[in-house]
Amino acid sequence: MELRSLRYFLTVAREGNITQAAKVLYVTQPALSRQLKSLEEELHAKLFVRGSHSIVLTDRGVLLKQRCEEILELTDKTVAEFALPNDVVAGDVHIGVGESYTSRFLARVARELQERYPRIHYRLYDGNADDLTERLDRGLLDFCVLIQPADLSKYHHLCIPDKDVWGLLMRRDNPLSAKSAIGAADLLDEPLILSEQTTMRTPFQNAFSDWFGESFEKLDVVATYNLTFNATLFAAEGFGSVVCLERQTRVDEADVLCFKPFDPRLEVESDIVWKKHRPFSSAAAVFLRALKEDFSCTG
Image (cartoon, rainbow, N blue to C red; front, side, top):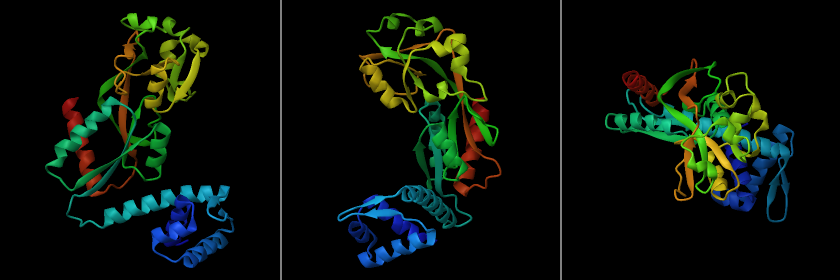
């Protein structure tokens, strides 16, 4: 398969219309149609169902679209890295981050590097642990931040020198808001919105379920989330209270919602991780060196 054919296919998939895609690509519609037909023949698969005014991806087409996005993103990343002279520290550093206040440490390091290396740019990707590690494993990210519990066995990692605190985000008119801290018994009759990470059975330690104890299965879990923003909106509407990290999200509805920590206090660490035996671009290597220096001084 040629990269050009993949770019043509991806453009058609995104536009949903061959005529419009041809305009975007600056090619004729017949030429584009021939490219698509040739790609289907090469893959021995039907990729589109063609209608009078639009096209719809088949199941195989959906799979190819996903693969195209990964292949072309990695290709563009590689071309950008090799386009720079060897003696110049410049280019993009790709970082995957979740919703954790500890990511602020990365911002501090980036700011301190900015004056010395103004040609380094940072591309941030938000996601949960599964999203981030998948992109890291495929080479689409240089680093990602993982909140514990997380399997770090196949990565190099640095522990971020700060900890987040678990607790309950709830409406201010909730009777539990009068308490200074929330105990495990307080959660038994409370409709809860939990992180998917806290509900999964994993081979490594799950801090929240361990903290809660034997009655974890009795919790009234009304919803789960992978990122906290929408869970916060559900909490503001009184649907349930969110088990989350204290600084995981900014509460826009400050007059509606409040956060109370757990008692006994439950803290969680975060790590910045990168693949073992992974060659870095000059920009990513400089960033990693600065991280190690900064974290060692902080520690």
